[in-house]
Length: 309
Image (cartoon, rainbow, N blue to C red; front, top):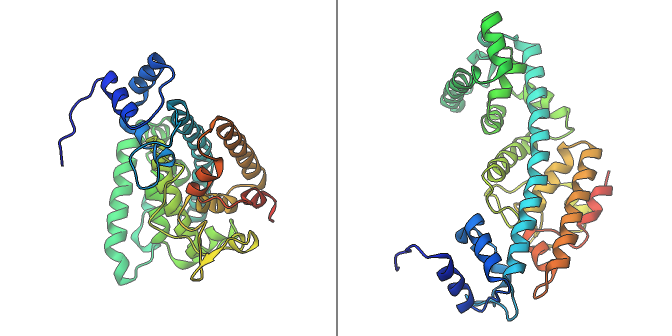
């Protein structure tokens, strides 16, 4: 494999042109490549390539690829802000349930006996509590609310400490709770414990992806979500008894958000997503919007999910 060496902006454009990409505005293309990174933009080329080839479909313009890039940025922002809503809701419910049962000071809610003490969980509990205490110690003085409690009361209530804990750590904490505590948290969402545990892991994965501005629209998670009534009511096709959409793709994330956002927040999110899809559709020439939706895992009737109770 040949080494990847530095290429000037002009050389980058020459490479794109050699693969059949049409460059209409040379200077603007250079500016975009400088600002957005050739490697990152290159991640959006696959829908525009001839099948089995590294060459672009005839007539593909740089503007079309940049439109998909721009769509993904707007789409990512929509998803990110809604995951943050879910994160805040979950942290609030989590801290309420545990504080009510075990107490509001660190020595109370961080007691190892509050968690599932089965043999296979002991190491995980100790590891997670060590990480949790470290995050509180490091981030506590950097956050106004937590530093206020430390300086004035000598402790941080759980409903405050969760603000400085990562969503990834908070989602892991759910896995070590006692079953009755999992059930109490899950009942607020009207979701089974196993499903909520999977959802939290998937949401934490997407939160990190969005925060780092990685490519979102065609991302797939390793974890498959459980079948839901939404798969059935949308008549999503199956292959060998497995749904082909909504299991580990972006539509799976939409199905999760349908269950953990309020009705109003979900409908608002879907309206914003529809607007961006319509915008992208108006910019595409050599491919159809359905090619993008397919890569997102969106079925043709995806809009109907907004109206399913």
